[in-house]
Amino acid sequence: MAPPPPLTTISLRTPLGPLLFLRPSSCKQSAISASCSSSSRACRGAAGVRCSAANKPSPPTTPGNEVSSASMAKIRSEVLSPFRSVRMFFYLAFTASAGLGALIALTQLIPAMSGRGVAGGGAVETLKGLGIDVAAASTFAFLYWRESKAKDAQVAKLTREENLSRLRVRVAAAGAGEGRSPVPLGELRGTARLVIVAGPGEFVTESFRRSKPFLKELMERGVLVVPFSTDGNSPDLQFDEADEEEDDGGEAGKMKRRIWQLTPVYITEWAKWLDDQKKLANVPPDSPVYLSLRLDGRVRGSGVGYPPWQAFVAQLPPVKGMWSGLLDGMDGRVL
Image 1 (spheres, rainbow, N blue to C red):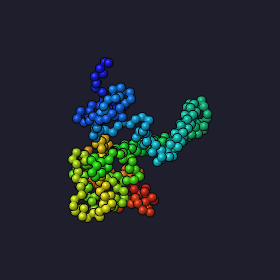
Image 2 (image 1 turned 90 degrees about the vertical axis):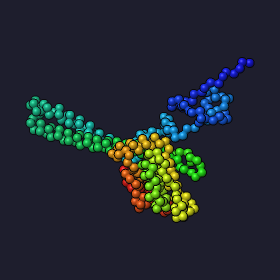
Image 3 (image 1 turned 45 degrees about the horizontal axis):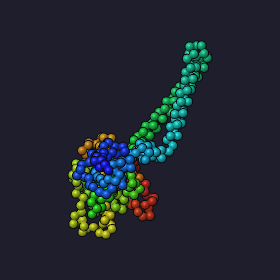
């Protein structure tokens, strides 16, 4: 029997991505991997290879499996303004009708003014009708343009919110290494009011220190903080001994600590989204900022500097109790 062919190098390719080059130090031999492709003959009966990559970009959206941010924003725009499309249809129809009337009046006015058509009195009436048609066409065209501009602005804002909802965070867990698997912010809609604190590590640490007197009230209002350090320095988010003594302990104490246990992952995507927001708001790129989100994921407030924790406590209603269902929408106006 002829000896088996020598083992060749296997190239791993993702369905929608380029060739992956993995460092040998990050790979370990294991049992036969069940994830080997059935079409790869070299994987059959051979030892599999398990590799890991930290902080890699999120996988691209597969067509047909997930709705794009722009499409979802258009759907949400239709839900928020259900009669806008009807108004735009009628504005366009009235503009076309008035324009057609103005064209007919113009064809009648030209021979009348040259003396080959109707008498002078008829020319005056035709001219009057032409003015009415032109005014009507201009009015409805302006209304259509204004409605279209408002729709584009709303879709652009909702697209940014959809892009934000797809950014991922990891919920830190004590004694669990890196914590749980990353989840998109969209999965927290309806359960938490997120506050994004973005700036240098010292700014995030000071924001954490200023929130300590209000942790219990913020917990009752379903506030969760996403600290994003823009300079690469890890902020100090630890409770000291004085906080431990003042803390009421038990489950309530654990819940107060969970307010600051969300960690952004895929930092490049967070930085890109934040830079785009600063450009739209004409904010310098190095300015520390905060963003406050409603329960439905829409932005309710933002600003440069430290988050106003005391104002959040005064403005936001609790998420539990007999009034929680009625006050869920009282998060403030959206930006």
